[in-house]
Amino acid sequence: MSRFMFSTGIENSSPTIENGRKRIDEMATCKHYDLWREDFALVQEDLTIRTLRYGPPLYKTFLGPDHFDWEFTDLAFGDMKARGIIPIADLCHFGVPDWLGNFQNPDFPRLFASYARAFAQRFPWVQLYTPINEMYVCATFSAAYGWWNEQLRSDIAFVTALKHIVKANILAMHEILTVRSDAIFVQSESSEYFHPVNPRAIQPAELLNERRFLSLDLNYGYRVNSEMYRFLMDNGMTPREYDFFMSEHLKSHCIMGNDYYEMSEHDVDADGRTASSGEIFGYNEITRLYYERYRLPVMHTETNTCEGPKGDEAVRWLRKEWANVLRVRNSGMPVVGFTWYSLTDQVDWDIALREDRGRVNPLGLYDLERKPRPVGEAYKQLIRDWREVLPAHSVCLTVPLADYPPPAQRSESQKQEQSEGK
Image (cartoon, rainbow, N blue to C red):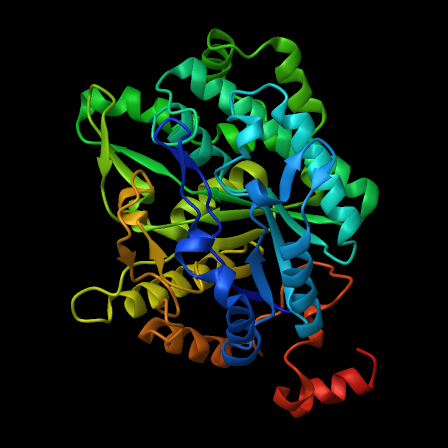
């Protein structure tokens, strides 16, 4: 049986702002291009974890139809393979190459699927994928809030972006499976909930609580309710397009990765305006709502918080989230992994990458000089304490997680199991 997947990630967001004139590249601002070997060493040698959410910069790698620059990707994935790190390949993280324009482009699904196939052919040893990260958030920030990429603010733009993004995700899964028939897809998607602040806000909150599911409903072939169906049809989706999502999904190959932060829950007023409510229900309750809808294995694929003025807020949040993961598991939901995101601090996520201010957000396990933060030390201890206790439920990896940690760090019982072929 494979081991529980303790994980982290390298932040690789790359949306454009200023009407496409400027790109925000978190790999660059967080110094990963310069320190990638050191980053992988931290994962392997310091954290002693094996699973890493990681992807090449799409805009630098996918240069045109059937035109790719694999130089950096070859180096990075080659080093991970040599170290025994299992990547969850994150192929599109909030941005597309300039030549593709943005998520309003109807050619995006087909072209992205061709990129996914080319990636799988070049790295056939990779088994775990997140083809497109946080599909709902990407469509919302790009086409409903007007913050990134196409920077539009309308329901029509949102539905257009959403249907292109989810279709691209599904087509990419199909293409990857032609190369790697045992591929597993981890949907990293935000977990949202909308709380009405008064009785008049109940209806808009209900609509938003259905809308938050749209990306996964389409991705998993879950039939939406009549209100959401009318919303999709009124804003540019055709019945034929909807039928595609209901018939071409690959749910049986998927793990429902869900992301939870303090800002994942929202207050809603009578006019439908939202504001962060902070944590009210928490990860356990919201994950239950998603699990009951889709009945898939769960992985907590993102969480973090800043250290705070006393330097201990992130440690408290880690402990709270881990307690919620254990509660989810004890409630009977199959939880296969947990992720503190990301390995290092990030830049300008306090303003959702809407501007290039260069402000460092202390969210990582390590700072940008690769020095451990208190939450990094706490995560290492948590992993040491729980690694032997939590086998994953049913994630069959060709490179089994039970092969890790390295022999020198294994318990005597693990060594005995290996010698007996268990």
